[in-house]
Length: 164
View 1 (spheres, rainbow, N blue to C red):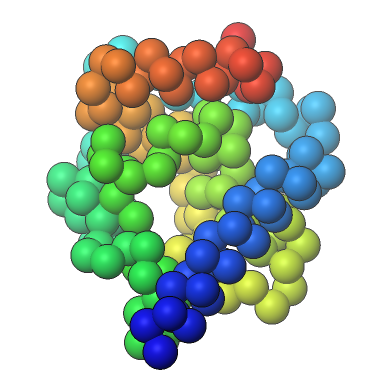
View 2 (view 1 turned 180 degrees about the vertical axis):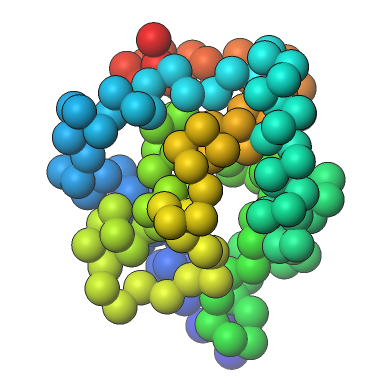
């Protein structure tokens, strides 16, 4: 049974990665991408403070007050969902370019990839938070990462052409 759970978990993770990398470019036009370029501004104190407040109000319940996420976040829970991942340096957030983080937060993976039956416990913030609020939250998250990871994330943005 444990082997089957591991296989299912690995399949979900691989499918999610494939969907994100394969279909995201197809659903995001250049006009929409203008809003997503150079999004994260972790050195802007006022923006980061605003983002921290919004994070505490909208995200901390699941992702933790200290960005630690939920325990066993890579294992399906009893409802068949993956728990909320950490957004600190132990998670995978910094592995994704700014624009993808923005789109996942605003629209959710199901809409981005056209997966009508995809279920997740992650809310979609398209109607809840403004673009500026999403940017502020993501900037706050990035501001907490060690310099080494922030630099790697900046390099990722440069490689993918998703930041100015």
